[in-house]
Length: 118
Image (tube, rainbow, N blue to C red; front, side, top):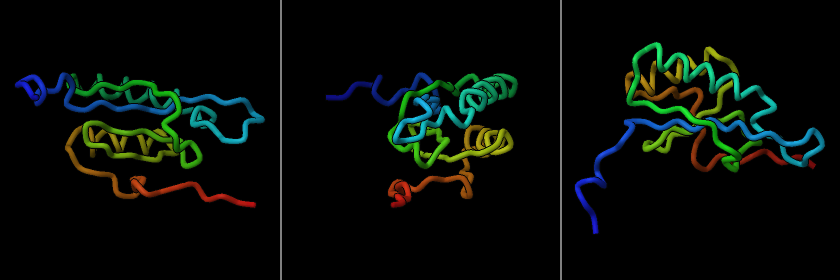
């Protein structure tokens, strides 16, 4: 059963930035070790400055792909990005969140998985 509310979104886009922190001796890395909290803060500040009131930016715990991170995912699009710098964050902000495009060089394919070493 659906209603008219089902098709309406409170936010046009909802961005989740993994800020998961793991202990230094953990078997798996966490995105938080790559200063993803600073990237989240930068993204929130810039989105607000650009007047993107229909875009929400939140922290997320582990998104299950930290070995490939630091990561963020944009919903409802379901688009995953890996980023290294605040310039990467700005490019995602301007291209995807601002204009609806994709930053091809930062896309994380749905079937991407960590490279495991012996």
